[in-house]
Length: 265
Image: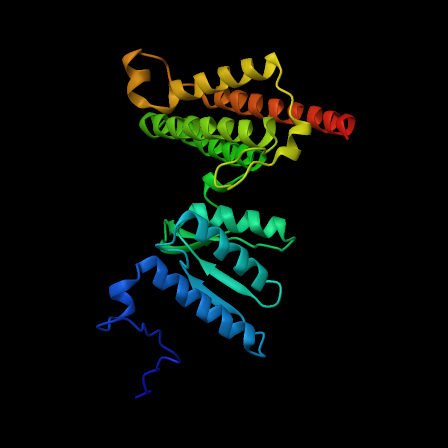
């Protein structure tokens, strides 16, 4: 039988009457100390072996998550760093920090599929995708919907239509943040990127397109409102037209932003 591993070091608090770290420090503070201690040991070591973290920011607050993400990205420049997390927010922070540090972040998703749990896929959750990648994902949803619709499964087709329009609404929201406002203000970001304002122009046509897209997406993303008003479920071809409207708007705003940025330099 293999011997049990022993702790290389322990944190002791010199307090009147004694006391253990767990009695004084919060769970987040204990985790922060553990991460800092481990990274300090790794930094002092001579090896360049990879390191693996499993949900390293659990129990940490917003500010400390950013610090941990930045430190892990920095470490990835000298060794392979593998991070397992179910926290979409932390994943977005890691991606942003990697972009700032000009580091490469390779992402994969492990979830549940027809074969069961633990199915690996290169496709990330919809919430993490850019507007253009959301459009691509939406077209994939539409293709699957068209197949189900052709097979005559009306109930499943209705469910998939609702799901697709719900995601289309999310894509419009992402488009406003990322494309129209040039990521000047983004969710999961701790600051405002004022320099990106040089590419921002909001025209009347943008307001009309966004309002139309959001209104229709909201109308069909919920089952009960549509049923109460007896609104027919859109055909898969109509869904494709709505997806293409988003993509056409996105492409036009990107092209316009490039021209505006060049002029404002």
